[in-house]
Image (cartoon, rainbow, N blue to C red):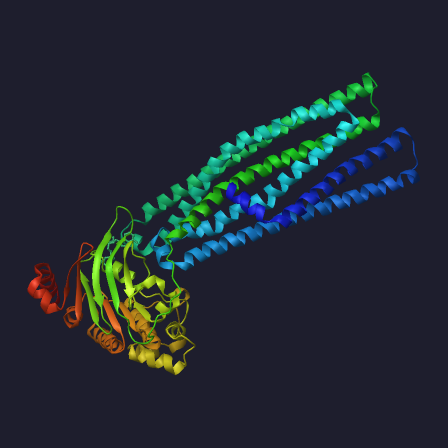
Length: 577
Ligand code: ADP
């Protein structure tokens, strides 16, 4: 709540406008009652003619119009404030996620993030569009009514003062109960969204393993949970509005009883006064009741706000880049891992105390069993993950002291499953170039990467749409697109996650020769699975269980490291078989 309150405070001009319009609103409420009662009093009791009451009718009309305009104005101000706050929140969330897409992707479900971004932020809306305007209005309008009632008839005023506190008191009790429930509801919704998206993305896998019906049941269970949570909140909301209605009806009844006894039995007040109070009383309670219902939605926003601020608070984990420029652009830098460690979480896998120096133009192979931390190490060198301890030095300066764009400008990362965004093949290759490359340049790059034949065989050639909305490519084909990007980019460092799957001889050769050509102008660091790559490496980093067991050439390691020898033996057998 405090977080939202602070944000509300920053919207000073809107608040001033709301306060100002609430005062005017109070005046119109009182004016409306006054004109209405005066007209009735004069026409029915004093027998005035139509002409005589024309000014009052005109007054009533003006006040009614003013009241509608004010309601519209303050509603609009609230909605504008809410949309600005939501925009800011979404911007912050988007910045956070895009400032470190790798880390964001590694942490948690993407469906859940979408849910926070869309639904939780939307949940905040009502706090600004309804709750704040209503709080301001309710702290002004009923007070004005009360002052007027007191000037007319003290006892009615007293009844109002005594009964009014029951409404906020009751609201507070219910509010406290709903907050927890609404937090639960947001929680359930985001769990549901997360699971739904993840299930959709993994549908093929689930089908293959015959687990789709199990997932269906889970989704069903989660959606029913969400329904129950929503119904629970609605139940409380309906119950509480019933109770609020009851309290205000009772109070108005008391006032009516008191005024009519004074008017009829004791004849101590005039008809005008009694009627005026009777018309004002419902307005008084209506304003309080409106606050009651706004209170529910306001409270509901809190659950959503907590969710958003929680997500934003994780910001600290994002990688902060410095401003130093990378000297000697074009030629590869020296990369030094100085006792670098990384933990995914407290108890999970950790890569420990890696010490290594990678010289310019060196061909490095990272080798080790599956799960030994090879990809993690590659991500650390890429600057996609930030070391938990120790540093990575680039030409003697800490990696993250550099400008992010400087670093990524010299780097190509060819993962096992490169991402193709939705667009044509040509566009997908062209993102490798810094400026818009010519179509001939794209074609040359594709040729060097050995993907040109395949592209030319397609009906639409380079204009074939791929990605989300287009043609799917195989893992090997995607890698060749990524290599074509690298040919355009001409990076000084290439990070390559070698395919683990068996490739046909032709593709294998193409990949090898492309990487070889790229290595003429750059340092190549490969997560290597192929004997050929391992044997030809200048330096092998041999990992086991997150530790760097040994480093050196294939020959060195064969001679000195038994585990390495065994691994190569197993691999060789696999290859020759
Ligand atoms: P390799 O590439 O050698 O197969 P990885 O570096 O991919 O190994 O993974 C090393 C270990 O880290 C594995 O046990 C894996 O389960 C774990 N791991 C990988 N990514 C994550 C992640 N995002 N969160 C938690 N653990 C992870």
